Length: 209
Image (cartoon, rainbow, N blue to C red; front, side):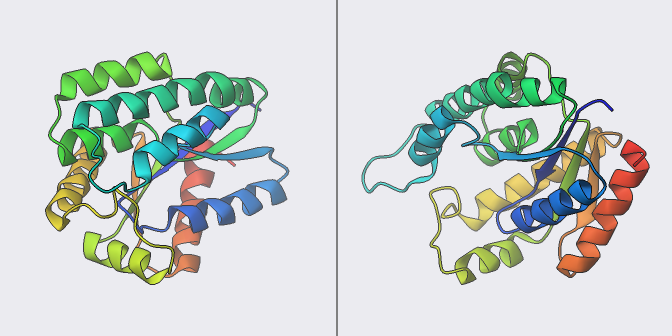
């Protein structure tokens, strides 16, 4: 069995972390070797970059282009150190965010040049695309309310304006419309169990499990 890259995407508070864990347990029950990872922060270097990107430091802002380049650096290391080797070993990778996040957040959210983003994504990934991307679609207000209620505190990106998060959501909608064979929308406002049932059905169908 060949390896597969399955990516989970969506706005803040969409439920990616929980659904990835449920999927991991289900796939392992089927006898499939699974790796769970994330961007940013899927490598030791990535953990340092994640802190730089997400920690809110008063009076020390990160420019939009710097932010884009840091995400690209994290991804380049992640692809070479984690994704490619595990795929070569035939493992299923469940990845929390990948290239679509950069398009949605830095492209639609920040308004950066899409051609530049596409070029950087290609350089960072060497052209490696997901076999399947699950887009957990929830209203941005619902997602942010979930994040505010978890007691952890909001990171730098989560503290952005509602208008920013709505642009990100629009980005995901347009990406899903543009790449229907790769990106599958799932209603993230349903119960966790219902969402997981839908995701398992999609994986069975798309990956012939």
